[in-house]
Image: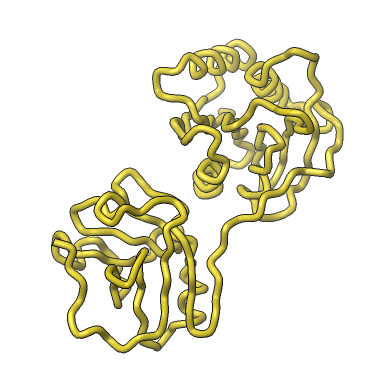
Length: 264
């Protein structure tokens, strides 16, 4: 059964859900349509790319991923089909594709469409063409100058890693761009402190589960994405520490502190 996912910036009760799903049901009846994510912060390509990058590979090969985030093309942008890693991505050439893939795609085409056609009709038609068996080259023209955005990466200085918060989940847990590999490359077998936003908030240990500390205590862990996550057992760390996207996470060499930090 063909699968189409939708990642959108629309609120749950927005009419656009019904519009694009109706078009898809009409153009390719029997298709499975899944809301991969909705209510992405409006125009936030970084947030959307993080979600798609860490979810798309869980779907079957051949899945079509429609991206409706900052998707109305402006001057100089085109609507594209991108084929990569046995998946298809349909969206606007606004820089999101390279943030999702972080690698060269297998194929990119510019979708052919009539003037004045809105992007929801264009995306739905392109998806239905793929499901009908057409190749991307049958739907569009080869495209090579795909827009690029530079992903925000952690930096390594002398015995220091400086990263930032790139995603906050539904529980307020703050996910950083510090990978497990980068952390252990610098600090394996060494003492360290993980400082969040300021010297006042720190931990000197990486744990596996939230319950490895008492309720109300801060912890750091590597999540299922192998990214360093900051949390508080039983509370919303982002609210309590006023964390947001871009908040700094710093790891440096340190002797073990005399007393750990307790937030409440």
